[in-house]
Image 1: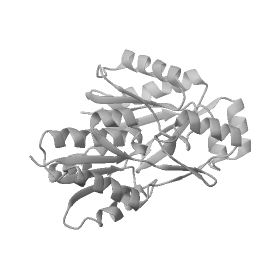
Image 2 (image 1 turned 90 degrees about the vertical axis):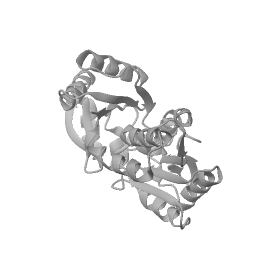
Image 3 (image 1 turned 60 degrees about the vertical axis):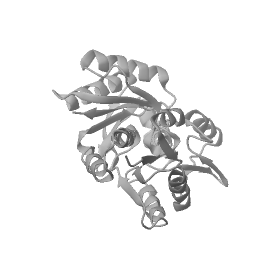
Image 4 (image 1 turned 120 degrees about the vertical axis):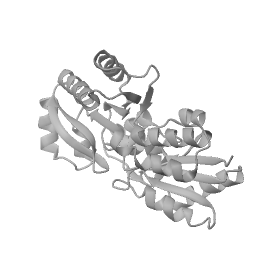
Length: 283
């Protein structure tokens, strides 16, 4: 049986511990404060990220892994006995990660490497990587895995709520005056996946309303379909996340085992501390 290795970048919101347990190799997104660079999930997590942001009053820059980082990851897998590799990348609409992985694959002529543009973010990408690993372990071919992953996007749902406009203003995505007024009025943007990127769906007021709206949107997206997998994502908001899961379980049937994870620095820098959300894989 051919051995197929699975690689993803850290925008998949898979913690290093969880990825290791799943047998998925992670290539880190880079976070830079001036001349200092940190590997997401290795040198910095969401908590440390926002402690640094709040201290400096400025957002860091994010960068895709270099082709060299992917090339090294590919080499490590082949050296360990892999006969093929599936590399699941965050949406090419928001990052150069996919392009970097494609470039790296050219360093291995004659070797089987499938680089997948997930067209999604966070645990939607994570679920794709997990499915690739499940299929690889079951003996599926590279062609079968690639075909399955390319059909998953339409079955994945993500909704998230931001707790503040502060970090959007720091990143220049909204004006500082608008952010100040929005925070006074307790405006909480609701985000979803659209066209391969996170997009503003609507704005609601107050924490209670945003929590209720998240549950409504997620429940409506499920309708009569089965939730095959679910993940709850957050940025330094464990308690809110637990409440969201509780309210979701009161509305729809979720798997007994779900993933609870940080959004991850490569993504959370764009949304801010206090973000909560959920990703569902529908049948």
